[in-house]
Image (cartoon, rainbow, N blue to C red):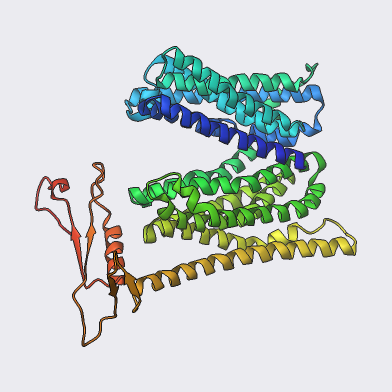
Length: 538
């Protein structure tokens, strides 16, 4: 049970660290334009890998433990072939659609000639093979192969990039080759390391597709419902936030998803364990892993609150101030995600796909509604609060279900029953504690903001020996009028002005800070008159 978790965590950590070093190195040696074009192609390949896997990786985790070694080889090989065929078709459709529509930008340039298009198709196949194989090795009880594959792919990129740079290749195609070729080589190495025996007589490919496509699609639909949240919440942010706020949210969301990863990997390991041992054994193990994962999530949450600001300062551009509050609001949701991932693992093991998919879809709608509504009302911080509120609502609604699921199956002995009840009570208690922490954090933030805005009668030391004393306005000493300015220009040509709703919020904030007069400025050079009629300055 714990070996797959260590392998998954090690593989992800090695891949992330070496990938970061690779891209930092490349960014210093390759023009930014080439990096942008290559990353557009690689991101699209990764997305195609997710959609073209057809749930085969998760299906193999559940199916392979019950098969003999020869049959395991057949199922894995056929899954790789089917997913590769789907990826080739999907990548070909993307290439044709981009070429026919004349889409410009980075992706259009990444597919602008046959060589780049071929690299894109090969990269899509590599992405789907990696997605399927990395999960399949869990079903084979060979999780260490995933670590080997990740290390081979990550380490091979450096000498390959050095050779291409020495040869004078510094364009986007060279970067695509540096990314795609090591993935293909790592898949070949992993296949060699597995050494699965050659299959004898068995069902035909058509028979396997006919019999196994239904359970694979059950996993596929559930995978999409779960993955959609992490993919669509940033889209909701892009649609509701102003450009600078969206950048702040994107950085906070990136760090938050890294914080959510270790507990999620523990749930994946739990499912792999249950696939071989059965749902009853999974329930027993879940009473241990859910407590460990909740503790891990709370430690990560505390670490993000403590170290988030210094880490965000690495990104520069004031992210330590703008993204920290958003990050602090996002990370407590990891506690409920732990429980949700464990429920999904159990329902997968029990083959209750319809229930799991329906609940995941409802949760997705709640989270998107909360995120979008919060973003419209209060920008990036409101989006984080809205998403977190949706997660807390899910937790409160499903906490009784989670408590029942961690109880022992069948007629247990008294001490086991008490242990199950204690674990369930702990789960509910932790969820309620997280909800309390969230409410408390919001109250503390509001109080601190009110204290900061209250000038009081405290002396303020200026430069030199001069001391200024601030005082509250009174009827006898009303003081001068305070005029605060709000600029509505963004400095970005594509969207030169802030949205009216955001301007209203800024004006309200200025008034709340004590301004008697609030002035709004507008760049005349960026104001475009309409074709007919007068300019509407509202």
